[in-house]
Amino acid sequence: GQQLNQSPQSMFIQEGEDVSMNCTSSSIFNTWLWYKQDPGEGPVLLIALYKAGELTSNGRLTAQFGITRKDSFLNISASIPSDVGIYFCAAQNYGGSQGNLIFGKGTKLSVKP
Amino acid sequence: NAGVTQTPKFQVLKTGQSMTLQCAQDMNHEYMSWYRQDPGMGLRLIHYSVGAGITDQGEVPNGYNVSRSTTEDFPLRLLSAAPSQTSVYFCASSYRQGNYGYTFGSGTRLTVV
Image (cartoon, rainbow over all chains, first blue to last red; front, top):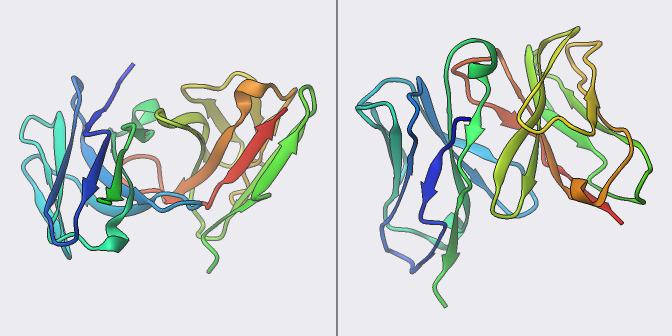
């Protein structure tokens, strides 16, 4: 089946650092999304991308929809403690079972001790 | 506007017991779905529904039943609980299946002993 390969699995951040994570697949998708999950909560949508090559920002977050439609990345600039959590990439297509959202395995962001 | 409401928040079951996880949304969303989240596995789709009276299987449907008698409610039934069903379960809804971001509930943490 379709799979999203998300990396890195985990990373430690120090306040003020920039953070990058990405998601790749061997399949083509029409929509890429990025979610954040805080402990004990459900994922919350951060950014949605609908067009190949699209670059979208949401505050300190920037995400891009890869030109091949097989990948996406998320950057967080000047990280702050509340950025800690699990970030998921997700992707979907149009129609039928293709319209269901599939998820990467997540990138866990923790504060550097 | 409550969004997506899941009950209960926590549940412990004995092997072989049955139970129903409740999910309700008040956004008039056509599409609803159930995911399970296991450590290192991301979120995997169990069942989904594109409207009242219509349900279909996702990636990991075995051991679970669903029905959609109203637009608002999408309960998930565990027929005979097994330790392998220990997980965190999330319900999600969307205006329509396709390129729309989902709204997630806050999850049900289920332990089967």
